[in-house]
Image 1 (spheres, helix red, strand yellow):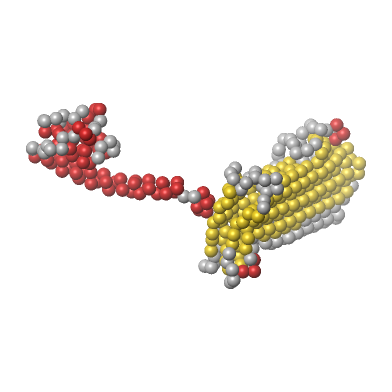
Image 2 (image 1 turned 90 degrees about the vertical axis):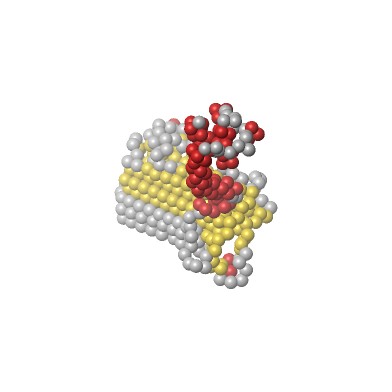
Length: 374
């Protein structure tokens, strides 16, 4: 009988029976009936009128009741945790995304709001976002909904901020005159926008986005793009750096002032990189170029160096020209025929250029700094 009582307790702890059912099973062990504990328990077969007839069984029942009380206390935090999990599952996508946003402006007057909007693919679907004195942080994902968290500070007047759709354009609408600060963090569909336009006077960061045209304008901030694919890209920063990694496209124009330009792991048919007082670096380790058969890369700066780490491959040929002043040009590309090879001006091409299936034309110009081609 002790063994059967232990089975009852085990069934209770495993949740196979309730506390009332456990007590009734114990009562049935008075000899009038014997439950089949190996097959489980069915409440319709319970003996509800029997009572324990000896002190041992009464003591065991009291111990069982204490165990039930302890078990209930142990289960309470687990039940609360399970309830929280259900609530988290029921949260909207926007609420989950909002928890992951990292940027918070300083100051007690900042507020925030979260928007959600589904995006329908069109022939000319556009996304336009503009911040004020705050950054723009965009992450693309394989979905069909914009989820944006806006942090802002007001200085009076209308405090209305809206995420709107007009025709095929999705944009953030607010009266700039009434705000001192607007920062934007958003998850957006990676593949649904044909045209993208971001404007800020702070940093702009974009990861994973594809489209026909991407335009980013900023003052006093850097532009950082990763995993971007676009036919036409225009990037302008008045006083910030431009950092590009894993970018593919047909045309890129990146222009800065007093900032450096760094291009890594990218496959862009035509690049125009312009800055002043900042270095220009073009560096990649990819093994082949796929965007086009003919490439043209132009880089121009002043008072700063230019470094180009060329793609290597038997089917890639280079036609290059480099000009500097008051400094030198260093060419480490193998198998080169020089047309001109002076300290401040170099022109030449690789021996395989006429027959190469991928042709790359390079124009590099700076002043008071060296140019290096690897």
